[in-house]
Amino acid sequence: MISEKLKKGHLLIAEPSIIGDLSFNRSVILLADHNKEGSIGFIINKPLKYTINDLIPEIDANFKIYNGGPVEQDNLYFIHNIPELIPNSVEISNGIYWGGDFESTKDLINNGSISKNNIRFFLGYTGWDENQLENEMQGNSWIIADNNYKNKIIGKSTTHFWKEQIIELGGDYLIWSNAPENPYLN
Image 1 (cartoon, rainbow, N blue to C red):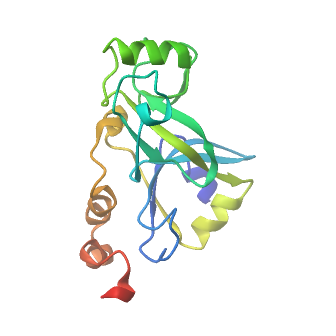
Image 2: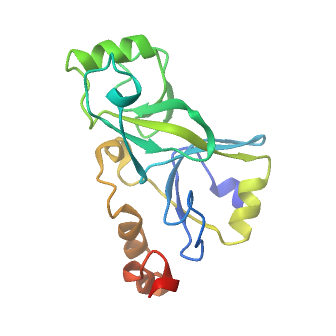
């Protein structure tokens, strides 16, 4: 059963057949929560043109902001790998944490205690209602993968992350690794 395979911390890799969907085409999503009421995740490989300083001027850093997904894109979310520094964070898995005390986080970034390899910011998130993600899995929209990067995924380069994941899958997916993002332009 698909629901039993899905767990917090897994990666969801968009099937190559997802074309034309600006949010999910070539997306890799970190599943932050999954339970019988639904699922939440963050697209980890879609940087935006903003930095944290653009959105919150009192933070003196140029950490990139990522498109976390189409839900609540006017809200800022973050994941990190330093729960000992950021109180009230919630563990996703593999040493990756979600949220926490934002005032402390701002101070820690400003004093240099947090680097871009420790934290990633998102506008919005990806959400699924009860059974919605399972239905998409049955419709072959997503590939489930273990997060072999553990908490180092936060500092992982995103430029070719989807392609790297597709190459790792091998087999019939290899042909898609070099295909143009929009095959109609080929």
